[in-house]
Every structure is written in structure tokens, then in C-alpha cells.
Image (spheres, rainbow over the protein chains, first blue to last red):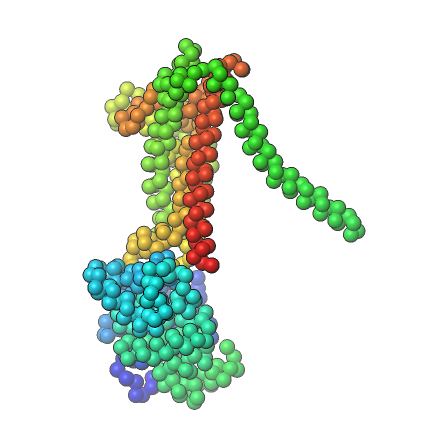
Length: 258
Length: 298
């Protein structure tokens, strides 16, 4: 079940199943490809397994109690679920932005350089360059350039979320995962984040779990509809929202449930 | 009906108010009593004698310096044992151990905190001090070291319990944020979780050390009770006597109203002062960091 003309795949998910230790099954036999340099949207009602899938892509689920995990996730041909995978290196390659902005209790600058320093980058010039580049990409540079040493927690909610995006960009990952990144933001900040995503897809592969169907429709190049742990439909963005093939997708996007 | 309700309301509010104020009254009364019994010492013993190095009350040598240093050396030793172990355990329970392990460990540690100190003293006399004597080739195992080790054991449960609560209260999202940036588990604990829980961990240390300062029974049983001036670090292996042990051991045999009696109360005042300082230091640290957090959040 894939759109016929899918561009070159960056990530290939093959028959992925996952069950949490508390008995709730979250993913059942998921297979699909995520194309490079596109925005792929995972949408559907809560509990469908969207976030779980995101957390598999950077192995953040390692730290939760998972009972069963089957299948493969290939990123550029390499199976990242292999126990021998270097998880730390993987998380630098696959960045993640969370629903609630999690700024670390440091200054704005340190929030951005933290990941790079962990990766062993010590050169001042590289760090300074990364701060400006990532803040500009996240459309935050103009607002904070004069107060980089202020505590990050003093920023507004929308700025904090863009700082979190910038922090991920500072590491120059290949793939960016966003888990409802605008759920706590006002429409203006949401617009800024969405606009920067359109810029970012030129260089990165973006996987987004939107917080509303409207956002899904606005942003998606490709859209995957999840319902209770199953992938129901995977199509071009426009097609999924205007002419879905599956009745359940249609019911959801037209607001009959969810 | 309505009238009886307001009447009940009145009685209940008053009762709660009285129990609240009673805490202040009791502290006040204790302080007053301590001062009344302790202050006359300044008229009876010259200060130079009081802060001398010889404690031999029968011959009227009332130098309390050996007792203060004894308390200090045992407390510092206990802190050196309890802080690394206590915080290490708290980090393990909060951050590393699997859930089932945590559910076993936390109650166990808290149970340890409820152990009567006389039982620990008993273990100290029968097991720890003979072992120390043989291991370190000492004339006696009843030493400051034995007291420090046991007091450390007494302080650890307090430190673990409170520090673990503080670490556990750090939102999971902080950790996930750091993990998602490629931080290892250790880097996350050290750079993110720990700084975020700093004020709670400091409170844990202060309360644990406060418990160690005030502890009496265990130290009386295992430190040998020789009132010798103790100066770090050599004295850690020799017998010492703490302020608490002195009061407990001698108060029963002293004539009420005598000079010796007043000196014992004066020691009580010094203890009161020390624990007051520790408490104020603890709460000011917590207060300051709380204020800073509020300022940033607002």
C-alpha cells in the first residue's frame, strides 16, 4: 500500500510490530517507505501508534518497557533496530522535537551547543557558526540574537519550541522527527514553524505527527493514516485528504469521528 | 441547624490554630528552659576554662573543645561516607534501576531509616569495632571511625529518600530531550537531571547531616567516649567523645543545679545553635534556588 510514484526512500519500515510491557499493543505489521526530502505526515486519532512509530525511528523506545519488537527499520539500507547499532550516533542522525518544548536548564546558546559538545565538537568557531545557522533555519535568529546568554526558559512557548527545533538542526541530522510540535502554540508561532518546515525539507527528511487534521492537510507531501496500531492508508498528501480510498480515512478527515 | 454548623466551624478553626501555635510555643519553651539552665554557667566558670581542651568535670575541668571537635570529626566522617553513597544510591534508584528493583529498594532503604539507633550501636560494638581493630591494627576499635561509619549509615536513608524524590520529580521530558540529542545515560544524569534536582538534593544532604549531628545512642556506644581533643585527620582512628554522648552519659548522675549540671546545659545550647545553623543554611539554599526558579518562570 504505497503511492506508486514515491520518490527515493530514505527510511524503509518493514513489518514493524511493537507491544508495550503493560499489554497495550501499539503497532501491528507496519510497512511503508518514507521518502527523502519530503514532509511525511503520520496522522490519526490518539492511541493509533504515531508517536510510538516516531520513537522507534530514533530508538527512544529503548528506555521504555517494550515487551515485543519485530520487524526492520532501514535507514539508508542499515537496520537500526539491530542491537549492534550505535544508538547515540543514531540519535544524532535522527533528531526529534517533542510536543511540549523541552528546553534544558541552560542559556539559549548552551541549549544549542549542548548536543554538539556531547558529540565532541570543541572548536569555538564551529559552535558559533552552528548557533547562528540553526537559529536562522528555525526562524528565531532575529528574535534572540542579542540575548543568547539569557536562560532559555525565559523565552515564550513558541520561541522555546523553535529553539528546540534549532537545537536539533544544530546537529545537522539527516532526518527530523516532530511529535505534535505545535500543539501548545498560538496560530502565529504555528505558522512560523510550518513555514520553516517547508524550507527544511530541501535539506532534510521530515516526519511530522501533526496535532490536527488541518495541519496534516496543510503540510503533508505524503500522508499515512494510523488507526489503532495499523497503517490504514498511505498516499500523496492531497489525495489522502480530498479523495481517500479507505472509508475509515474518509470518515476521519471529514470529521465523522476522531 | 445553620447556627450549630457555624459554631462547629468556629471550634475546628480554633483547634487547628491552637495546634499550629503550640509548635511555636514548645520550641520557645525548650529554648527558654535551655537558656535558664545553661546561662548561669557564665557566672560560675570562666570562659577560658569553658573553651579549654580538658574535660574532667570531677576535678572541675570543664573544657568543651574536645567534645565539639569530637562531634565535628564524627559528623564530617559520617558526611564523607553518607553523601557519596546516599546520592549514588538515589541516582541508581531513580535513574538506572528497573521498575521492580526500584519498588523493592525504596521501601527497604526507608525501613533502614526506621531502624532504632541502639540496634545499630549494638552491631557496631559486636561486629564493626572488633573488625576495625584487627583490620587497622588499633589498640581499640571503638573510635571516631566506627562512629562515623555508623552515623553515615544512619544518614544514608534520609539522604537517599529525599534525593530520590527530588530526582524523580524531574520531568521525564527533560531526560528524553537530552537522550534525543544523543546524550548517553550518564551525560543525561550529570548534565540535566542532577542540576534540575539540585535544591532537593541539597536539602537531602543537609537533613541527613543534621540527623548525624544529633544522633546520640550509636555514637555513645561505639566511639569510645574519651574526651580527647580531636584534630583531623589523625584522630579519626582514636576514641573521641561527642557532645550528645556527654550529655546523655552524665546527665543522669549530676546533682541538679550544680556547676557540672549547668555546663551540660551549656553544651545543649551549643548543639541547639549548631543544628539551627545547619537548618537555616539548608532552608536558605532551598529558598534561594526556589526564588530563582520562580523569577525565571514568571
